Length: 107
Image 1 (tube, helix red, strand yellow):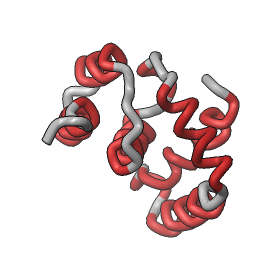
Image 2 (cartoon, rainbow, N blue to C red):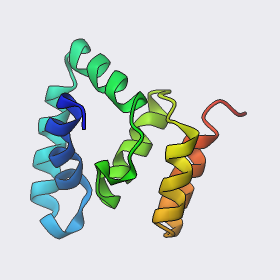
Image 3 (cartoon, rainbow, N blue to C red):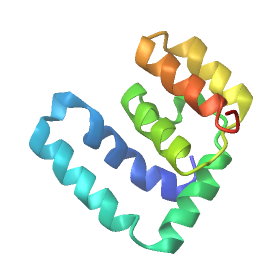
Image 4 (cartoon, rainbow, N blue to C red):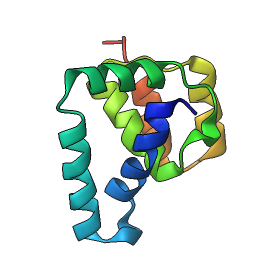
C-alpha cells in the first residue's frame, strides 16, 4: 500500500465504522479533514488512490468512504479494481458505491 494511503487507511475505518461509535467517527473525520486541508496532501492522496489495484488494501468501511471520496473528487479508479470490489462485497451499499465510481464520467 502506498505510504500516504497507509497512513490514512486507519482514519477511513475509524470515520465510518459504526462499531467505533459516533464520537470516534466524528473525531477522526475532523482529523482527516484537517490533514486534507493541505493541497499537497490532497494531491498525494489522489495520486496514490488512482494507482490502487488491490481490493485488500482497505476494509469494506474504508472502501465505502474512499469510493465516495473518489466520486466527489473526480478520481478514476481502475475498472479491474472496481470489478474486484463488486465481486468481493455483495452488499447493496458497496455495489452502489462501486457503480457510482465506475460511472464517474457518465452523465
